[in-house]
Structures are given as C-alpha cells and as structure tokens.
Image 1 (cartoon, helix red, strand yellow):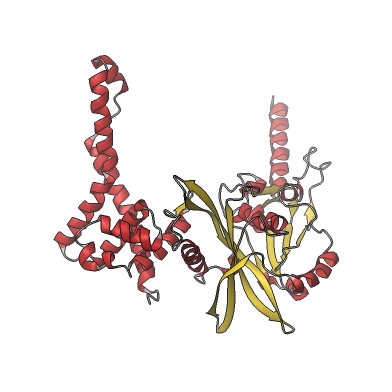
Image 2 (cartoon, rainbow, N blue to C red; image 1 turned 90 degrees about the vertical axis):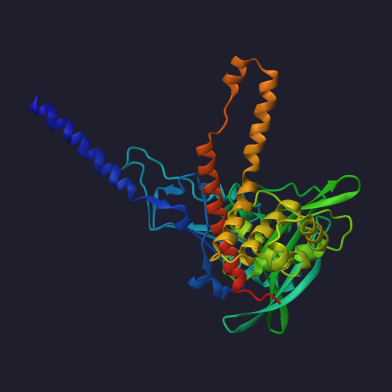
Length: 421
C-alpha cells in the first residue's frame, strides 16, 4: 500500500515537472510580434522604429498565446511607401516533442501567411533591396488636403488622398493596407473591394530623400456610399486606422474633418453615418462634431440651455451632414459645457433632460405591453409579461446617465485644450 502511494506521488511529481517545463515555452503573441514601417535599411536594426499590435486574437486565437518557443520574435516589416512585406521569425529555443510526450510547437508563420497577400518576402536581403523601389512610389487617387504639424520641434508634412477601386494597381495595394486591421480593429473583416461604392481616404507623411519626395503610409479610412431613396447617397464610415507611430498627433480628427469636407457640399448626401463605432472612435467623433458645432448659431450657450431643437438638427445636417442621433448627442455634450454645475437647479434640469431621453425605451416598453394586454387573454399576457420594475428602471437610468456624463466630460476636457479657431 505504501509503495503504491509512493508510485502515484512520483507520477504526479513528474507530470508537474513536465507542465512547469512546458510553461517555459508559452509566450504572449502580442509580445512576440514586432512591426516596422521601414524607410531605409537603417530602420531594420533600429529598435525605436518597432511597434506592437493592440491585439492578436484574430490570428493566434483568444488566448493570444503561442506554444513551443522561448525568446520568440515574429518580424512583420513593411516598406513605408509600397508596403512591400517581410515575414520571418527567430527564437532562442524550441520545444523538443521527444522530451515532452510528443507535444508539438504551434505554427508561427502560417496563421499570418494565410491572412496576408501572397508574394511576401522571407529573405531580409531581398527585402532590403526592395526598399529602393519606394523612391518611385506615388499615392493613388486625388489629393484632398496637405497640412503641416510640429512634431517634437520638427515640422512635418502630411497629405490625404481619396481613391476608389478604379485606380490602376490600387486593389493590390489595398490588400496590403487592410492586413493592419487584424491587429488594431476588433472583429475586423476584409471588405469586398470589387464593390465600386467603396471610397478610400489614405494618409501619408511626405518627406524628402536626396531631394526627391517620398510618402510613408500612416493610416486610412474606408467609406461606403450607400444608396438613399430616391436619388441620394448616405456615406457610412466603416474603418478608420492611424498606425501607432503616428497616433496622438490629432491625425484622426484631421482625417474625419477631411471626410466631412469631401461630402458636406454635395447636395445628394443626406448625412454621414458610422458603422459600429469603437469606444475610441466614438470619443474622436464626439470631439470633432462638438468642436464643429460650437461654431454654429443654433449651438450657442443661450440656445443650448433652452433645450434640444429642430433648428439644431437642420443646421448641423445642412452644414456638417450630421444625422439626427449624433446631433442630439452633440447637443447633450455642449449643453453640459454651457451648464453651471454649481447651480443645483440648472444641473438638475440638465440631468432630467438626459434621463427623459434615456427613458424613451421604457415608455416604448409600456406601450407595447398595453397593446399586448388588449389582444391576449389574461393568462397569455401574464406568461409573456417581462416589464422592467420601477426600481430596475431607475437604477439602469442612473447607471446610463453616469457613464454618459463621464464620457461627455472627457470630450469637454479635450475641447478645453483644443484650438477652436
């Protein structure tokens, strides 16, 4: 009996050692990945030019882990202009299946290779040689705006181009562009670029090498021009991405304003919408729209304090192509800005205004229940009734309001530090 106990404990100890050893070969895929936008061969060995993904679960699974290696580095490099792609990996040690009960290491390159266009390079010398072709690159489409920004004491020039699928060579270029969304846009999916209603706004940094201009890709936005009866269009912003090396410079706001400017004078455009905006995009959109609406007559403080009006809807739609739901949201942000929160009554009136709007969903629920009550027998009505209680409603309203106000205050904080000219 004692011998049996000793044998079982020994087995458990060996299993534990195997498991602990295997953990040594588990690495976070976000940590392992290394991206670069390479302008010259010097960038390849410069650690400061590297950047990381925000996520990798769309390629390596929900756990975002890769098993079988220690010291793993996955190198996904792009030439800055043409986005010629280099993919390779290095590691310090790889698991030996013979030593670990036949456990095989995970695939490293294949999950990426299946999601990027064919023709990527695996030899670093070939990639370095291909960088020379970037010198002849010219952006696709029509330039919509050129602007300059001071970045760390250096003036940089940026250009945004509008393009559609008719541009020669653009479809192949877009295939390389859209690979970035795998790492930076959750629930991302590649779009059907054969549809001629897609529009692409591409942003570049323009810089000079040996007296000649070159263009480094920085980010892009896709817009789908939906048909709207009878002969109008309703552009919908689908994806917006500014790559990490160029974030926190205000470029997302510039991009959004360029899109607005492109459509605001088009009489066929009813309004501009957004498809499933992320929290980050919602914050950006609220900031840009609030900043723009501050210049409109119907959004001045005196009128904001009088409540939401059709005049706001009409002016924002006519001047900025905003839809009614977004206009209401901007009104709430700017009314908070105009409200003296130290004035208890003024602040109470503001909260009531927002909560009345949030309460609409429950009023609809009540109306639906009244309709059911008229057509169902009492026992059928009792079986289907799922009315939210008064206490549940109040709790939900308070939670929704608190979350909204926190969001609105962040927008106003950014507005306070912005150039409103």
